[in-house]
Amino acid sequence: MEVHVNSFENHSKLLNEVMNNNTKSKFKFPEPMLLLFYIFITAFILSYIVPSGEYERITNDLGRQEVVADTFAYTEKIYLSLFDFFNILVKGLESSSSIIFLLLISGAMFNIIGSTGALKNAVGILVE
Image 1 (cartoon, rainbow, N blue to C red):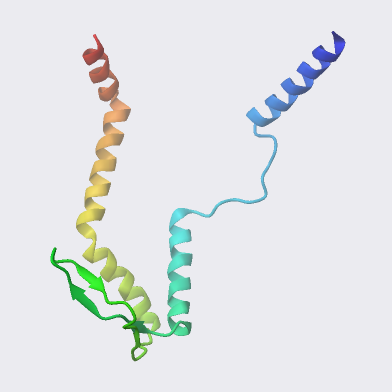
Image 2 (image 1 turned 45 degrees about the horizontal axis):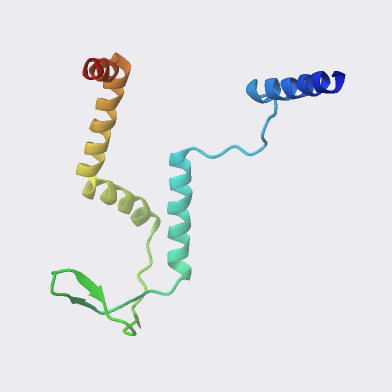
């Protein structure tokens, strides 16, 4: 019987350590914006290393663009300046502003609905 009691106490102590987060992890995941910036910097650096090229494209019966196999050709490399690096980020945000706005507004809407308890009350009314 004592073996089971000691085993239970050991498991209980381990569970308390995990629940109290006493075990510290050395790796901390970077912030999402910093991670995106790292990806952006990596793509900028790779634009100087990876050769430029393109495939020929055709429009299929449904009106979609398709790549033609075995038509890859190298194109003239266009090098970006540091100004272009930051300008492209702004142009990308500008061209996708409607999607970004939709995501921000819908996120705010769900946050308001969740914090006021409106969704819980609506589900409760429907269940009754």
